[in-house]
Each structure stands twice: as C-alpha cells, then as structure tokens.
Image 1 (cartoon, rainbow, N blue to C red):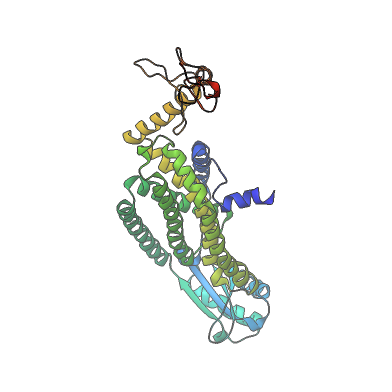
Image 2 (image 1 turned 180 degrees about the vertical axis):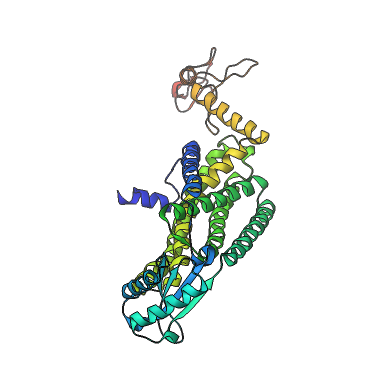
Amino acid sequence: MAANGLASRLYNGEAGLNIVGKRKLWFGVAGVLILIAILSFGLRGFSLGIEFAGGNSFQVPASVGTLDDAEREVNSALAAENTGVAVATTQKVGGPGGDSYELRTPQLSAEQATAVKAQIAEDLGINVDEISSNQVSEAWGSQVTERAVLGLVIFIALVMVYLILRFEWRMAVAAVASLITNLVLTAGIYSLVGFEVTPSTIIGFLTILGFALYDVVVVFDKVQENTRGITANNNQTYGEAANLAVNQSLMRSLNTSVVALLPVGGLLFIGAGLLGAGTLKDLGLVLFVGMAVAFLTSILVATPLLALLKNYDPRIQAHNKRVLARRGALARGEVTPKGSASPTRADATDEPLDPDAAALAGAAPKVGARPAGKRPTGTRGGRPGGGGNRPGGAKRR
C-alpha cells in the first residue's frame, strides 16, 4: 500500500494531479491575493528602515547589559530631551571592537542627537566616546530604490530575450508573469505583516528572481519535451501534455525548493534568532518568503498560463479539436483504437461496424462459405484418402 502512496507517485511523476485543468481556480486565487497585496500597498504601505525613511542610529557597547536594557535607557534619554520619538528598531551587531547594540530612531536634529547621546552616556555610566551616532538621509534610500528598479527592468528584459531564444515568446510571457506575481505577493506579505524594508531586503528581492526563474525553466523544459511534435498524433491535447510535464517535474521542484530553503531557514532562525545577528534577518527573511512563493507560482501560475496562451494558437486549437473529436468517436464506437482489429461493412464506404455487430460478424460464417469445422486427418475434399482407393486398399474396377 505504501508503494502506491502519494509520495511514491509524486516521486515517479505519476500523481496525476490536475493542475493545468484547474487553472481558473489558480488564477482566481492569485488574482485575489494580488488584489489584497495592492490594497495593502495603498492602505498600510511598508515599514521602511532608517536607510529609506531617514533617521538616527546610536550604537552602545553590549557590555552595558541586555538589548532590552539598552533600549530602555535610550528611550529614557529621548524622553528626557523632549524629542517626541522613541526607538524604532534594535539589533545586535558585531565589530572590531566587540559586539554592540544598534538602536534606530526617527529623524532628529543635530542638537537633539548630541544631547541624546550625552544623556545615554550619563544614564549608562559610560564615556560619551564609547557611543557612536549616525544620521541617515532618506535620499540615500531613494537612490537605492532607483538602482534596484533599473536592475529589475534590465533583468526582466534579459530574461525575455533568453526565454524567447531558448523556448518561445509564449513561454517568455508566462515566465515573466510568474516572476512579477512572485514579487507582488512577496512584497504584499512584507506590507501586511509589517516586516522592515532595508537595503538587504532589496538585494534579497533581486536574488529570489534568479531562483524563481530556475524553477520555471525546469518545468518549461519538460513541457517542451512532452509537446515536441504533439500535432503529429491525436492522443493528447496540449494542456494534458503540459499537465503531465508538471507532474513529472513536481517532485524535482519540491526537492530543489526544500534544499534551498533549509540553509536560508538556518540563516534566518539560527543566525538572526538564536545568535542575534540582526544584519542577517532582513536578507534571510525575504529569501525564505520569496523562495516559498516562487515554488507555488512556478507550478500553479507559469505552466497553466502557458497552456492558456498556447490554446490561442490556431495550430494547437485545431489539434485539440481533433483529439476531442477522436475521443468522442471512440466513445460512440464509431472508430476503434489504433492497434485493434475491427471488421468493416463490405461496401464502398468501408464504415466500421457497431461493436456488438462486429462481435456477431466475427462469429457468423459468410454466405456461401463451407463450415469451418476441422477436416478428418488424411482426407481430401471429404473423401477417404489413399490416392482414390476404396477402404481396405481395393482398386476400382
């Protein structure tokens, strides 16, 4: 029983999951999720890091206590100087001089930043020189965003050219649509959950594009193999051949995604969570979310969309009609499957018989034919043998 389980059938590409046939369901779900993501962009926006929103950061030695202790003292200093702001984010960072805590706040004036720094040093009982402060303008984040968008446009253009040369333009359109869906859904998760967007997040966004493209190309390569010369026979429609390719490559895509997510999960949960390396959190988070979404979009969006686009090709449309017409004729008994013999009517039309009539025709003798019984051994024409001699060997006189 275990040998015929879903895992075994997935591994052998025999699960028979109707993914392409249910494309309306997948497109509907993807459309709803994209709509939710776009609404979140407009209503909630993004939680921008200090590099994009602008602000100040204070670094204090880790020797002052825990991260919570440092955050409490910095908030106290901000309140004492009547700045009207509080610590936005905190993280533990490493450096040549040892570990330290980085605490980021909204934008402060130069005078406020100096006063807060002095108050922090007094509250913690350390020298002012042990505390470093930096001010980041939002203009730097704008430059990073512009460069990222430019890189994204160049990447998509190169991907389109490659896929058109490697496959065809319909596959290129389906793959790029899958990539854009992946980006929108990943960004939607960031907006809904409130994950902070930093330069590391932008780098991660561009990184998951390569992974998502690889997954799509693996599936499309199998689709191309299954559909090569498909119009030469009437056994499968294009959608059925594409669905078979998805089933055959599903386990490979799943294995690839799991293997890729394991080190990213270690980077995120161990590096950022247990070891407190906050600089790894932003990169690991976007990679983990993006890769998981990329696996789903490459299977549930890219190939079904490709099948939909191919169905508008007149050549594929004619092929699909032939396949469906042949199946209808088989169901009505008007034709017989290739490789099986079927008697036909003895007239000029050579029309196949009804299956029941064909069985009777095979059992009944033809008009004027002799019975098909077995002749006795040694006879010829129903007479005893012996070269025309009578029984016993006596010759005719």
